[in-house]
Amino acid sequence: MSEDLRWTDNHCHITTAERKGGTPAEIVAAAAEVGVHRLITVGCTLADSKEALEIAGEFPNVWATAGIHPHEAENGTDGLEDLLTEAKVVAVGEAGLDYFYEHSPKAAQAVAFEAQIDMANRHNLPLVIHSRDAWDDTFAILDSAGTPVHTVFHCFTGGPDEASKALERGCYLSFSGIVTFPNAPELRAAAAIAPTDRVMVETDSPYLAPVPHRGKANHPANVPLVGAAVAAEQKVSVAQMASATWANAARFYRLD
Image 1 (cartoon, rainbow, N blue to C red):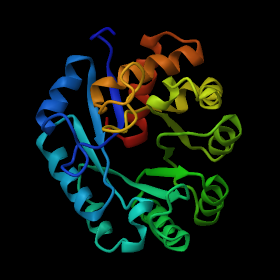
Image 2 (cartoon, rainbow, N blue to C red; image 1 turned 120 degrees about the vertical axis):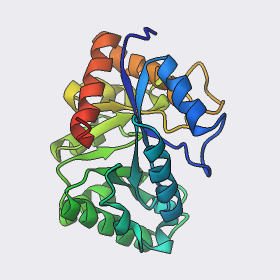
Image 3 (cartoon, rainbow, N blue to C red; image 1 turned 45 degrees about the horizontal axis):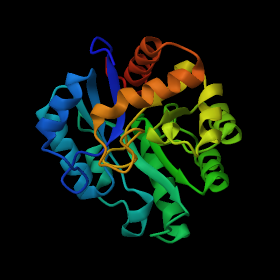
């Protein structure tokens, strides 16, 4: 993969609770060596969001989100809004619904999701959504609460139908290493129909390492592999995908 290409890892976890395989400085440096020059490190709890903000403050090319993951929803969202005025916090989330694990009750997940949609709308910030096995309820809550102007489905795992519903609501789709998995044809079909100006790429590291690293700890340095897979489905060059996703992330998070 050419080091001349510039990539953004739209969604990674490099805080203490999540990262594997090095310090933030080592992770950022390894990513830069393969052209991944921007990282969005994502908050999942209040403490995690605070640390993400601290890490972002150490690097000019790292930004943070502040959010309460649906797994943590029963703990509430108190204190989260205090972080949203920080300059390096560029989005609310990851927020949403996860009915696959249901570590928090569905009702608590809905309350936390609605609260974070409200925060994103009031603070004019993008929203980062985690949705797993909960498409109908996710779309229903977005419709009732008001989909923020900039909303992304991170680690998008749906097929063309779910992609169309997200795109109809003006959302972006962020693809992870799952797009390289042999057992994900519906996801690749979704990648094929997504407008190139509404696509981003991510690692969700340390999870979901792409082929040929599947089963190992993931790192932001692997995002070019994801980009190449999405480019293949969209029938564009890897260079075009790098350029498009770089511009999309800048526009989405207002990084310029």
